[in-house]
Image 1: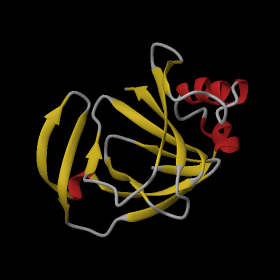
Image 2: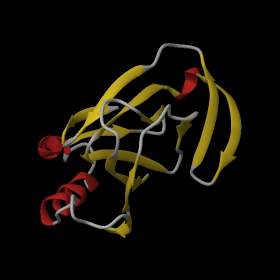
Image 3: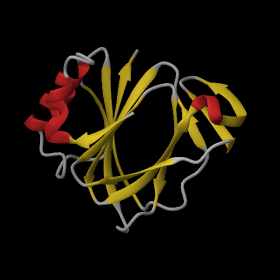
Image 4: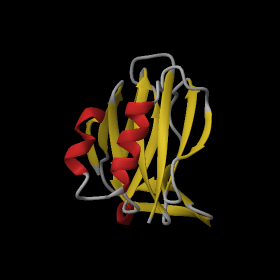
Length: 146
């Protein structure tokens, strides 16, 4: 997992060449004004922009075919993260997602606040959508094909 401010994404270009595509998309678009929906940035990267009220989260989830880069555009939420090896009671793998109903360790709690991003690999089981402070969040989730 990487957690940082979006303006620092350039510091990670050497880790994943798709970070540059995301950084360009963020700098060239007014994400606050952009309508919710799906956007294809390249063959390797797609974005989903959504707005919702965070709650108690759901089950932990993990992905096999994509990395997630989750960016808070407006508002905030908490994301809990654990190693996928510490997640249990899988509900079974479906295309690109697996949910887990239990955990055998304490989670890392990430405060995803406006302008911050969390990069999550397939080894990072995560539970997003947990109320932190704001009533609403507008968020972009970038799916980076592995």
